[in-house]
Image 1 (cartoon, rainbow, N blue to C red):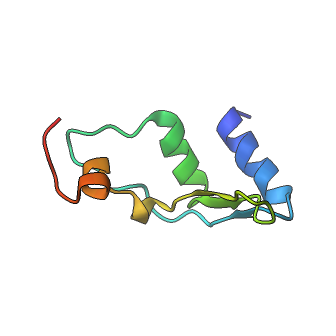
Image 2 (cartoon, rainbow, N blue to C red; image 1 turned 60 degrees about the vertical axis):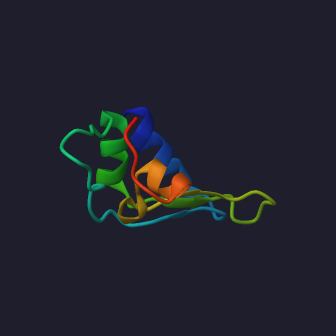
Length: 80
């Protein structure tokens, strides 16, 4: 079992973590490449919420929420 699957399975056993069911892979432009470990992650689950009871919970967003960084940061699409 590889590390991505092991991580997801471990999170499923923790009461303060929620693993979302797998849905779709992130939609990317043809010029973008989804790293193989991230592809494997989203094939296995649809994101997760980690350490819900802590002061700093961590969320791995569902694939449908993935956007280009420049759209999120700058509010517009720019080259480079």
